Length: 325
Image (cartoon, rainbow, N blue to C red; front, side, top):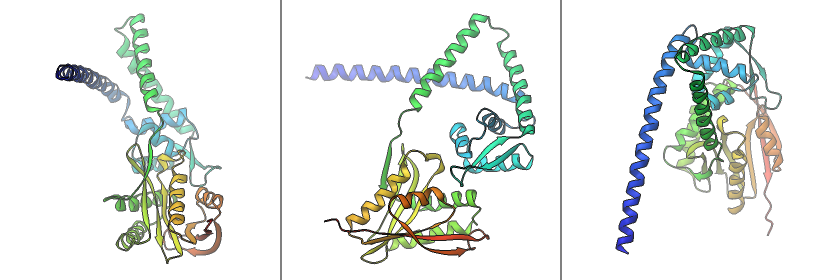
């Protein structure tokens, strides 16, 4: 037994050593290729568009009509940073926006004639600089280079297309601030809510945490990254309010919103609540559709100008929960 265990340990150590060597080779290549791209970028970009802005223009050329969410997913840029870029592009008439017919919260983005001309100039500059880097290679070497690049892309694409792991868990330290921040960012960017709205959310969350008897706050995670939230707050022994239901735009389309919503409803049934209600705003069409799907009905409307300076319509939606036993 000892001999087998000892041999396994040696083999395992050898495997780890070989893996470390391979990782070092990958990192060495990454450093080398980053330098190659850096030299090319210096020649192409910052005249007049920095690298990130140029990538946004290219993305809109190849995926005309895509949303800001799709750009974030494709390029991995910060949401706030992208928002500023898009605003400047709109001011300079490089892009134009059209409200999405499927989701009124989203806007489809398009390059204008000015934007397409900017892309054309960038393409010419990029092709010229890449041609310089390939001048010393033979035709067969260029073919080998392209083939190797395609293989790298294929391997990485296969690994990144694996189905993500989604979990719904009770809140932990640090999550309350995250929920308030996500509300502030979403409603600030999508609906131009004032910064004080985030304070309003944080205040409500703080009160909830200090008096959370009969309720719970859940966080959705996608591959370990926080992606949204929902909460149940007790009004009395028979009535609960569903609050802070929100999903990060980057994770739409994965069914996370439905999982969060069903988690909250299941909690209410398990704790024998007879009635549940929520407040929303009339422009959140996707959320309103979900509420109706699960049997909620709108029971009240009221105007609100507190959060963005413009008239909003707040809606109350209610659902009776019946004991099926």
